[in-house]
Length: 115
Image 1 (tube, rainbow, N blue to C red):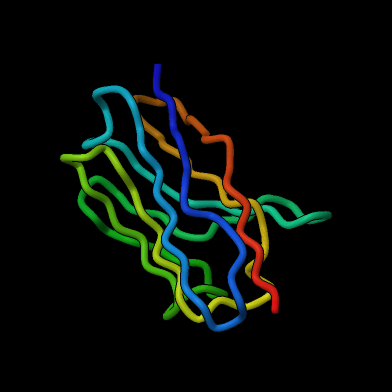
Image 2: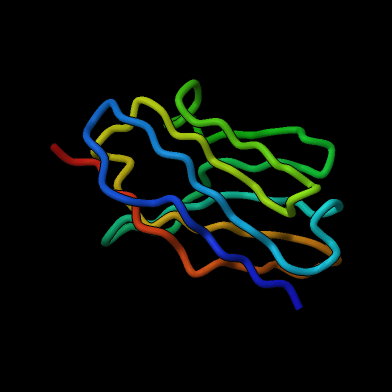
């Protein structure tokens, strides 16, 4: 069983930065596909960024150049560095792991961008 625990969310002013972390339990992290999704009120959950076991990354157009996804296999942790934050980035951010044919989700962490 894999458990994912996100942290690092909070309230930040427009133009500010936050770094989200997602710590995973279990032994499949190093071979797993990892990602971050977000869901704003009234909207569907949308892809933000993904990273493969080989560290190949992919980003939503709306965050390219501002967000960076990375992973530390020694710590079983994936990160999302978010810079130049905008009010439209306000959402609950969810970490996901896909490994051995199963997808897991974290509980989510709230990010609010407001002055």
